[in-house]
Length: 190
Image (cartoon, rainbow, N blue to C red; front, side, top):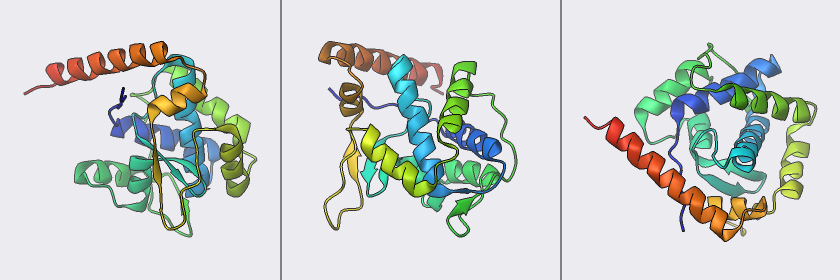
């Protein structure tokens, strides 16, 4: 078994932008990364699919959306996606990022918007380090990387097991995801 969602760059920008709009001021990138992970994980827990489609890694300060983290750092491998991100989200200044302009919410459904608002309301008053510590305590899929290792992958299956999905549930989710990816390729083939 190996579930791999497809990164949704436009949705990722819109999710980050929604958190930044709710915050109404620049946000420390660590706090944003924790909220993004929490939103993705809640979506996975509630409807068996993530919002962003990103892959996860464990880092010293908790779980992280790997590709979005690279976008925040300005080190993402796809230039078009990096330009998309940089059009709406500022680069880090003193570890804080800001909304440059509003990308809208056309890629987000009402469920996702409600979930993002709920995560923000639940954790808006945490500072970045308390929020990172909270992710260590709440999410058994997180493991502290060994000394000298920046990150270790978190498999979607591991997260699904942590939220109580059975092996059979996970196989069904994998089949559904693979069908979706296949249909997406067929529909967008040129």
